[in-house]
Image (cartoon, rainbow, N blue to C red; front, top):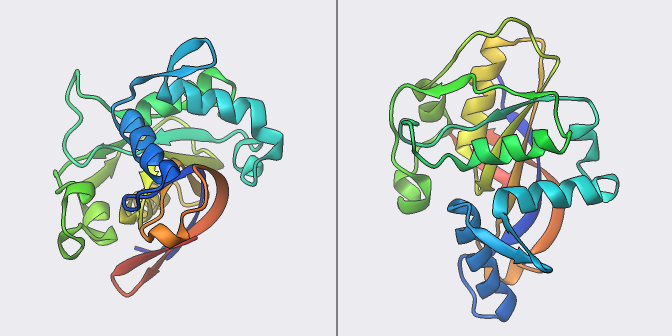
Length: 217
C-alpha cells in the first residue's frame, strides 16, 4: 500500500459508552443509521440515509468539508465486510445514492467489490479487527470507462477505519491520478469524556503507522 493517510469528513458523532441523555441518544441514532430506519424529522418521516443527505444539502456551505463535495467527486460506497448479495442492506450505497439525489457528487460508482469476507470490526475485539492491509487484500476494483479526478468514499460509521485506508489504497492502484477522500455520516468517540455533541461536523485524518491505523479527531 502506497497511501499512508486519508482525509475524511463526518457529520455526527456517537459514544458507545456513557449514560448521559445525549450519549444514549447517539447510540439510538447510530443504530437507526446502521439499519437505515425511518426517523421523525419535524412532521415528516424519512430514512436515515435521506436525513443525512438532506442535512448536508441544507447546511453544506457551513460545513468544514464543503470542499469535498464542491469538486464534483464520484461517490464510491464502501463494501460491507461480507459479500454484498442481492437484498442485503448496504447502507453506504444508500447514503451515496441519497447524496447523489441531492446533487452532491457527479454519480455513484459501485466499483469497489469485496472478494474475500472479513470479520465485522464492530463485533470484533480490538485485537481481532482486520487491519488496513487485510481490507486492501480483500477488495478489488472493477474498471470503469473513465479515470475520475476526484473520488469520495462513502461510509456509515468511522472508527479507526482501517477499511477506508485499505479501500483508498485499492482505488489509488486503479486510478493513480485521482484525489481520494472519504465521508462517513457518523464518527465514533470511544472515550465518553471526549464526546461533546451528536451534531459535530469535523474534518480529520486516518493515518497508517506500522500496520495499525489511527484516526484524528
